[in-house]
Amino acid sequence: MSLLSSTQGTPERIWSAIRVVGAGGGRIGREDLWTWLNPAFRLNGVPRDNTDRAERQVIGAASSLELLTLEGRDYVLNTPALDSYGTYADLVHDRLCRLPADHPDFILLETLACLGLKAESGGTEWAAAGDFADRVEADLGDPAAGDARRFNPTKQTSWRRWMSFLGLAVDLPVRLSFHPNVTRRLAIELERAELPVEVPLPIETVLQAIAQRMPYLDRGTLRARVAARISVKDEPARLSHLLSSALRELHDENRIVLERRGDALGYVDLAPDPFHDVKSVLTVTLKKVSND
Image 1 (cartoon, rainbow, N blue to C red):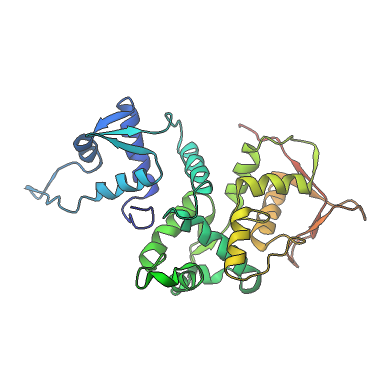
Image 2 (cartoon, rainbow, N blue to C red):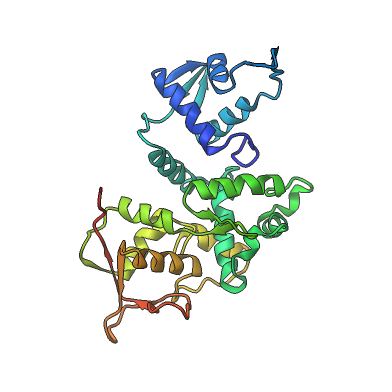
């Protein structure tokens, strides 16, 4: 079972599952966990018909992420106790970034990499379009699989939910409500990279850290793999629209400072944006994060 096929296995429900197991000391009986996730109750005085077993999908998704393992008749937690929802999101992001290409969940970040590459020529508006799943399948599907699709409209809904959870997209109150945006995740990963703060760093140093922690973005191995698969040229001399937008947003929020000093060598061009003053970057200064 995969994350996208487990439509009931939402990030929130998986979080509930691992918190329940953690509260039980890291091990809990299978039936007990099912009961915690989907307790019996009466509706209009009549016991609710509990036949859909949505909890099975929740546990299946948690198992796909290797957060839970079934040992005998018990589920065992495969991670130290997580102290916050944000820490949980970081853990999921790290595990998805390390997946091999033959893992069924590989398609999550592979799709984002494909979207980022296609955005260079066609924008990102089609991410909210009704035919998004068909476009992804055309690019990343397995021609030898027949009717077995890697990405379909049902999985599209789950994919959007997971991208938002990971800080790689936002839901907007407009007609095109889904919009890929990596700013939140980029801010998190720059902090987690433990780079020096309050000192100008060469842009290449920062890009190397980003590529290692977010391989679906510029210079990353996943982005390069998808570019080769869909026969799209990945321009290394200029940053992508997704990454350029995120860097500019963090600059505007004073989370980082983007600078280019005169005609010094070593700068990198950002994607064109006629409404922003920052066109290219030589150094990046990471600002100290306030705990207030």
